[in-house]
Image (cartoon, rainbow, N blue to C red; front, side, top):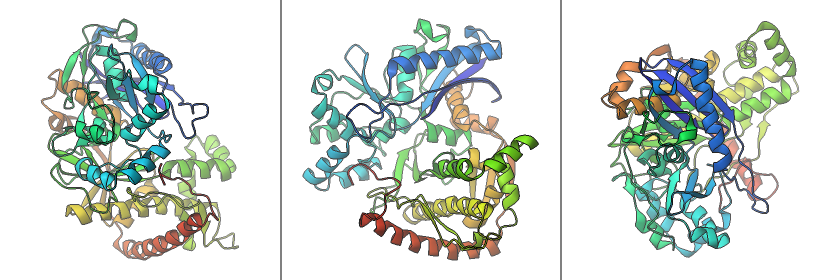
Length: 517
């Protein structure tokens, strides 16, 4: 039997996952990695290619060992990664400099571009769907200003998933879904716009070939990878977009919410659709030719819940361990009797997406009472669940407004989708059906689909979806609750605006600010 391998390079870890051709996960090898702030470079997040490549190879070997497979059993391999992370190479293909996704060192460069090239961010956003906040141009400009001896040697750029494939095959290339997050890319044409670099004084000769997801790149040439030289290497893509494919979201108008550490709300739109004039939403090329994805991002929703669990719920963690259940499942169980609106508690954490000028209020809870029967851990827990769903709805409303699409159902995946209470709350707040897929590793499955396309196992990604994606549960909305949540949403938006003013007045500290603000 043939097998496919997906290498998933996330923010906190890298994994090699083996699937059979029916989409069944066979094994996984995983290693955590960290991205270190450089000395005297505030808000930097460097990516150590030498160290991290050893971790990638150990994941590959572990996955093969756990599955009791030989390297020759892997027909093809592809990769997916955190978006925005970039790797720069010299003319021999050796890595010179790399940063992970939320590297925010280029604060001064973002301000410089905005102040000295009036209107250029808006011009680039209309073409690429990206702002400067996490784009590649300010980071490369930072390198030019602060490490000129390194900048002079730069001959190529790629994303981190592309770097893995380059290490395996010797071919440096990118795909639209991942490369598009550099902001130096055309949504419509799905290729680099080198003129963007020229306009801001950056080299315009560093852009590698663009290959669509599923394109065969070659065979494995790296001897220390643990893979056979007969294994084919296939172009992958961005984690959210390939994760969408793994969830079956490959047709125009389909919608997914990915509930992980951050939540992403993604809607498939034609690639000819112009981004919104107010720059409120991000737009990325999808892994399917002809489609883009309008994307809202809800910061820290999963991380906030983890913080709440670890800061306040030690007793629940002990009880959950004794009962051999997940602590979040126990918290949901104890929160079921909390009414819609969580007794009026208003969590202030992630704001809705304002991509052009994005910053958050100081984290807090408003409207707490001194009645322990209503204001307790469980009502606060449910309020956080409600808040993540409300912010998701606001982001989806923004996408509906500029795209003209109607949303009748949403695919919900990621860690949050394991919670039945959270799933039902999402359906109630959105006022539409919420579908839960059976797959638990959507991003890796999407990358394995790409690998299978490259060697002809699947005709294309849409065909792979029809063969592999299955559904677990469907939640229908309670429309009575939906009406109540509409009022709660309105109150939350008013409260958040007031809390932002405390940040503006330097009274409170922002949860997060985009570089350049």
